[in-house]
Image (tube, rainbow, N blue to C red):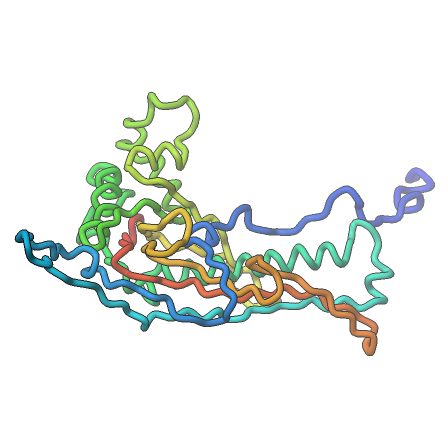
Length: 319
């Protein structure tokens, strides 16, 4: 005879209070690529001095007793930014909030979910527009594996060290500014750090795994950013289809450490600060007529390409 009382008689399953499980990305990098410019207006003109005006030599020999040569420069006022507004809210009915057991914290959980949604949207906006060969990415100087270089997963025939060095210098030949930052996806990075040429060059540097900083120093870059975010592309209720946010491309770009006057860049990220001085802000709306509260996250931003000559996009670097 089974033992009495049984397990089901002495314990009723309840919600654990020590842990809960939610799926989020480990890291987002979109905000680290182009310097953020906080702006007071939703749209404005970005004044540009054409490249030739500063890089063209117009000095002339001077003859004593004369005024000497005179010249000048023009200003281009056609480039503009516009910070589109993005907003998402989570409805929290009072009855559900008051009836929730631990570990649920309805307001804290909702705020975390909204923040994750805002970060993911920013990441997708950057990767889809600047890391692909369409959209603004079409304005970069594109170099294709198989045509302009050998794909990096061909360990016997490729030379990613030389490729990164040569193509990083591509922008300097057009603008005077060498690319100092590389952006790539995690799949590309995982293949790159196993490349025999890189392993051989860095094997005596450290006993630890190859880091972004080590490779950046080797190829003459300031920074290498690795996009690891994924996105569920299937509709709600359907089986999850998980896709990489970053394609198997690499962006090399000339980007200053901070924005400023007379400071050229591949791109800037403009953020309109109508309420706070942060890229995103939250607000809480009480809706007494339906006995609920809404938590919202809101952001106004424009990830803007300033000049395509400041970047080079290496496409299909791995299969």
